[in-house]
Amino acid sequence: MSDSKNAPKYESIVLRVLWMLVFFLVWQVAQFVLGALVLVQLIYRLAYGAPNGGLMNFGDSLSSYLAQIGRFGSFHTEQKPWPFADWPAARAPEGEAPYVAPENGTESKP
Image 1 (tube, rainbow, N blue to C red):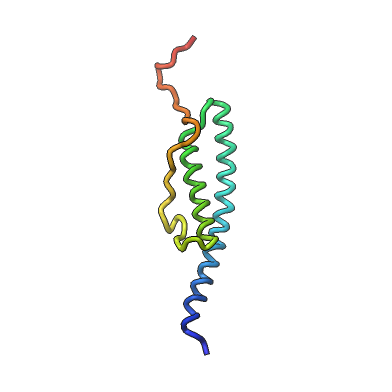
Image 2: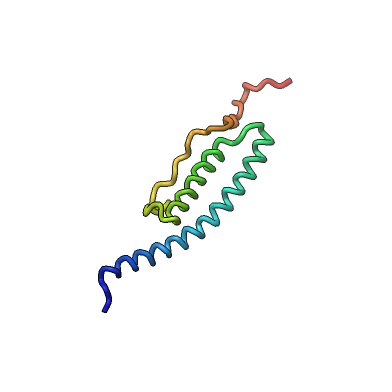
């Protein structure tokens, strides 16, 4: 005889394991993208003297997304990460100020 009380728990854990496998693959791709972003941001910082604001914001939200995947995978939360939840918002920068391109005509040339 099958115990009907255990059946839904078994189905939910099987479904969760499948989601965890999917998010493991997403983690691998996002980790690579974050690594590439760090490299591009470093090159940008060396070239312009300050980091790119857009890359700063995307890097912060991407690392928050990776944290959401980690919390879901470690059973800390039942909330599945994006696309089942909102994409994490970037926080205010705590380090260097981002590069601001000079407006046309305001830069004096020697």
